Image 1: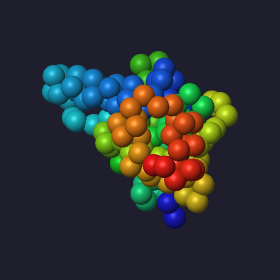
Image 2: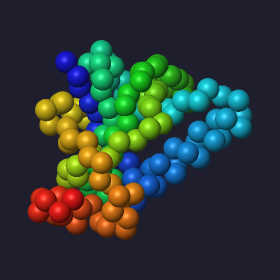
Image 3: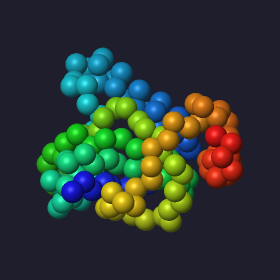
Length: 145
């Protein structure tokens, strides 16, 4: 059964900020001859790896709302320069906009059951430039987008 993760996207103000960051990191990896992968390193290794690798995604919480997701491609053990064990979450560089879903702040990552995950949507800031997520959600509720 598919399982997802949710994580705060600290320092991003919008999904476009996250996309720009991904593009910059991928360009840096190309320049330095490293594999074309997007990796997010986290302190704790998920114990339910098989479920996450069965079609799971990382749902990013941006400014208190889940707005975007990336498919999880792999989970790899890693060790930091400080010798502490970590986990590299290998993500698809492609992002998918999802229906806005409010979330309270939390530390680290949390599991997100498939039935609780927000649905994908074709409407994001590229389709509705400059509109706040709350307004996009209200317009969607009214059936206008």
